[in-house]
Length: 199
Image (cartoon, rainbow, N blue to C red):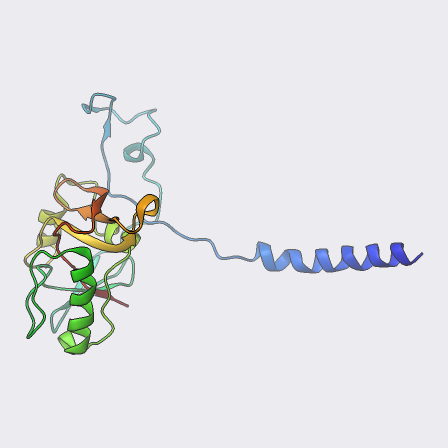
């Protein structure tokens, strides 16, 4: 008899907890921007029936305008809610020396600009790989040109993310190449640019 009562309460508790799990929010991923389809050789083909992103156009529509320049050296992204520096060229700010830096130097650069209250804020960070990749527009050949057209200045090509490369976290981190639109891992001792972000 005791085991049936215990089983009854276990069933009741299980049923009560189900709505909490099923009530989770749905994440809306944005569209990639890709509008073409390619074959195995890289040649452009008709999208009909390919199931490729150029045909399906899955994801949330990009807001128009996507980027809003608020003055003061920052531009917000209406799609992600992130706030980026308008100058994407890793500028020198006081004692914070910019240009291409190693991954560890990139983290030190972010700490330095926060110490200097860069553009009136001290909560800048190195973007994670998902945040940085959100700047890639697969509908264009070179995202750095497109981002310049959106109002950013000094947009470079290769940018560090804060995300280490899991197979070898001590050696490599993920980066985004805004020239080729590729996301790859790079040795942390290599030089790349830094594009500070905040929320």
